Every structure is written in C-alpha cells, then in structure tokens.
Length: 492
Image (cartoon, rainbow, N blue to C red; front, side, top):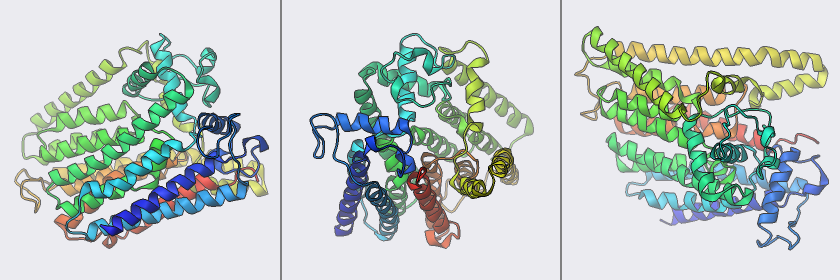
C-alpha cells in the first residue's frame, strides 16, 4: 500500500537524521548545552567511540573525529524527529486498524529498516556496556554478582561504563546470555556493542511478531492483530532503546507475553508453564515478578476444590524455586549475590514527572529540594507496591467469582481473558510510570499488553481504540515523557 510505503520512508528518514544528529555531537566542547541523552562525560566518551568506529561513514574523518553541528541544531533535530516518530506510530496503528486486508510484514518493513538504521546511533547510555562487561567477567571466572567493575579496570570495556561501583543487578538468565554474546564476539568495545545492538533490534521485531501471534491465537481478526503488532514495532522507545541504545527490556516482555498467552490458552490448565515463563522473564529483570501472582491466581478461575488449588500453588512455588536455583547456580555463593538487585531501585531519581518538580523546588531552596526527594522516593515506591497489590487482589476476586464453564465470546477462551489482559497492562503501566526510577526503555513495557488489550476489545467488545478514555492519554504521556527525558538541557 502506498500509505505504508510513505510512512516507512518517513520513519527511515527521521531515524537517520536522529542518528546523524547524535554522531554530530561536538564532544570537545564540553557538556554545556547538551541534551540529557549525551550530557554526561561518560556519554561523550561513548559517542566518541562510535564516531571513531564510523570514520568511514559520510561525515567521518580519517583521524576518528566526525563532522559537528551546533548544539541547538542537534537538540531540535532530535526533538523534531522524536515527535515525528510518535506521530508515525499513531498513523501506522490507525491505518493498520482500518485496513481490512493488511499484511503483517508490510507493516514491519518500516520498523525493520529503522532498527537497521539505529545501528548508526551512538550508544550514549552505559547499560549495554555493563551487559557486555559483566558477561566478559563471568567468562573469565569473575563473578559479576560479587565483583564491582572497578576491580577489573583493565577490561577494554571498563572506560565506557558508568556503574563501576556496583555488582550485577540483572537476573542470571541475562548474565548467561551476556556470557554467550561476549563469548562469541569478544570484548572489543565496537564489535561487542554492535553485536548487542543487532541482537536487540532482532528481539524488538520478534516481540512485535509475538504480539501478532498472540492476538491470532486468541482468535482476534487479522487486521486488529496486525495493528497491535504495528503499535509495538513502530513505538519510538522500542526503536531507540533496542538497536539504538541497547536495552534488554523487550526480551523480558517477550517472556511475559508468552506466559500470559499460554495461561489464557490453557484456560487455567497451563499455569505451571506460565509460572516458568514469568520466572525466566524475572531472571532477566526482576521487575516482572508481580505477574507471578496474576498467573498463579488463574487457578481460581476453574471450578474445583480448595485442596487442589493449594496443591497447585505449592507446585508453582516449587517450580519458581527450582528455576531460580538452576539459573543462579553458576553464580551463587550466598545471599550477597542478591544484595545489589534489591538495593538498586532506590539509587537514582529519574522520573520526568517528579524530577521536574524537584528541579523547580531546587531553584528556590536546595534543602527543600532534597527534602522533596527524600519524601517522594519512598512514597512513590510504596505507592507502586500498594497499587500493584490492589490489582492482584482485585484480579483474584474476579477469579474467585469465575466458573469453569464461563467462556468469552471467542468461544473456547476463558471468560477471564480480558481480566488477565487488564491486569497485565495495569501492572506494567504502574511499574513504568509511577516509581522515581523510570526511563524511556521502561516505557517499552506497557505498550505490549496495551496493544493486545485494545486488539482484544476491538474483537470481543467492538470497542475502537480511541473509545478507551485512557488510550490517547497513554500515547501522549509516553511521547511527552520521552521528549522530556532525552532532550532536556541538563547543563545550560
């Protein structure tokens, strides 16, 4: 279709301009006037690495430097491209929703091309370098859960890391994957980071395809399934934070999506498989742990005795523990292995909503700003926990009232299918937007369940996406927060 071709070409264009703008950062002029995405000295080192690596690219110089743009031009080019990308996501989704004979791969051409272009984006965030270094440490017999990065400062990846004083904060499944990638390509900074960017770009597309597959398995008509996949694949966060900046969040969400889909299709009989998949996701990033409660509570959705329910839960707990011990085995030396994973969420304060208030208060009194930080940090963390518990309890009540014979209008799917999708979307919405520590790569979490939920409602309840009062605000909020986070000028 002509509309798909036009939208795809525009996506490729703005992706290229965005990547080139970051490469054109004048790294020798200091931090003043830079966007948050490249503001720190460490970020400038990582941009310089990519400038040297792309010296062959138009704009590159033989001495490893790169053509530079004025800082305001870089900022506004990035901002405009980001806004256009969110508009393209919206147009792609709406067009796919209204196109009756729409091919999935037609709508993936744009995102696939954009992921390839995003390989040019300078990896200014340090996380991907931490992934690589922790995997390389493990391959060399150093336990990343017990050893801080500064203790192996001779590693070629060390100069590009930021969190040099902490041990691993990711689950053991992710550490094993890191070992596999670094074992395959080595620890040369350019080569290994390029490998990660390719890996994440592929994962992001696979997750979008998985959303389409889940929708089709749930008997959602093709055009709604394609639209759901487009909403995920075209999301700017999914593009920038995958092959662009390199974050593992889409991989975690892929496992959760598989768990939810399996649990629904099993109508309460595949709970153990769902538990295994959620556990695997949590052993990439532990943030998905609340979904264990949702999956386990689906056992209540079948009309059977309390004894069998409790036996089932006991099996779920055993399964969770067995997977946990099996994957932590290579790194386990006691509870200290878990220490950093527990304390990490309280270390930084990044949520654009609350951070903005902190900055305003700081203009009047530094002490008041620090007090604001100390009050809002625990308040928001506790609030997130309480909200998630409320979702889990309410879902449990829905399960308790549900009978085995209850079916959705899809015929063979359980009547509580929509309740699972709502809980899925709500939990990751809370986790992505409420706590003080939240980043644009976290905003790849809720788009997966949101896409599946709106597709389900389009099929089961004939509700247009815009018929949800929360849908448009969700898209706008994600766009605004991403814009604030990446493009605010930190050091004017």
